[in-house]
Image 1 (cartoon, rainbow, N blue to C red):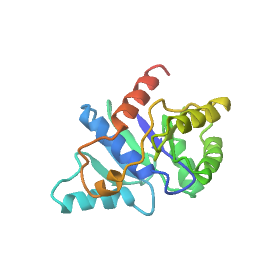
Image 2 (cartoon, helix red, strand yellow):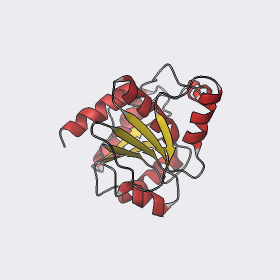
Image 3 (cartoon, one colour):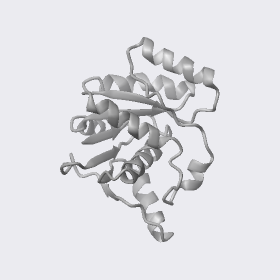
Image 4 (cartoon, rainbow, N blue to C red):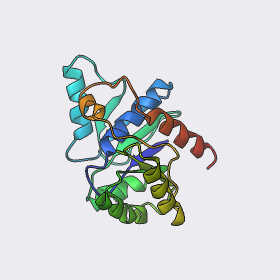
Length: 191
C-alpha cells in the first residue's frame, strides 16, 4: 500500500505527518518505509539527526528515485515537495491514497483547492493539522470541506510545541497520529 502525503504549499505539516504516520504503522506491527521526495530532504535530515542522537527511527527513510514498490503487507509513505508539479504528479500516479494535511490559516486553506484538483483521480482525505483546541473552528472547517464533497479525517492534529521539539528524535507520543492512521487504514479496507 502506498500513501502520498501531499499539499502544493509548504509548511503545512507534510513531513511531520509522514513521519508520525510511519511511526504509528510501525507501532501497530506494519512493515513501513518513508520515501522522501522533497528536495529539501527534511525527512532524511530528521532520520539522520535521530541516528546521531543514538535513537534511530524504527523504519527506513530513503530518497525518492521513482515510483517505489511495496512488498506484500508493507506500507510506503511518500513525503512530497510543495510546488513541484512533475514530482507531485509522478507520486500521485503511483499511490493508493492521498493525504492532504492542512493548517487552519486562510493561506493554507486556499491552497488546498489546487491540491484537491490534482488528487481528484484517487481516494483523498484532508487532515486538519496545527489546530488549536477550538471545537467550533474544527466543525466549521469540516463543514466547509464536506459541502464541497471533500472527505475530512474525523480525527485532527492539535497544535503542539512538542512537534518542533520532536524533530531529530523518535517521538514517544504519537500526538493523535495513531488515531489518524487507524481511521485511514479502516477507511481503505472499504475501498
